[in-house]
Amino acid sequence: MFVRNLKSVEGSEFFVEWGNGTSHRLLTESDAMGFTVCHTVVRAGSESLLEYRNHLEACYCIAGEGEVEDMRGNRFPIRPGDIYVLDEHDKHYLRGGASDLVLVSVFNPPLKGTEQHRLDGAGGSAY
Figure (cartoon, rainbow, N blue to C red):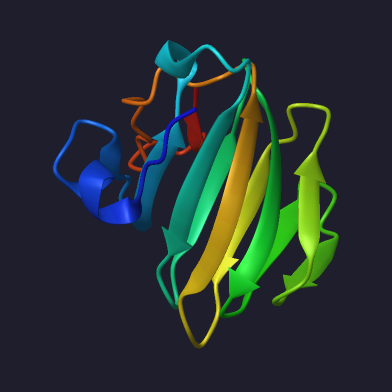
């Protein structure tokens, strides 16, 4: 058993500034659990085009507000208590609302923990 907290991750390579927010990679591939758990903050008013080609992701909202939009134009507001699931490696827009969106994100298979989004391309960011 082990215990890890946000503060201890902030001083490590597993604290990632991903362009429109931050990600504390609390549990990574090196922990040998078979999945990753992140504390993710999406900045208010931001928009990111994202895709996880090698991972499935589920995000549970614990604070704030935002929106996720699929490539068919379906928009889903995200508020505390909501979970959104990218079960088909779905390309999507993730938007922060009037306040920062705070998520618990779970990835399968696990992330190495140092992956970075590249938000400057027209096709969005994928890893």
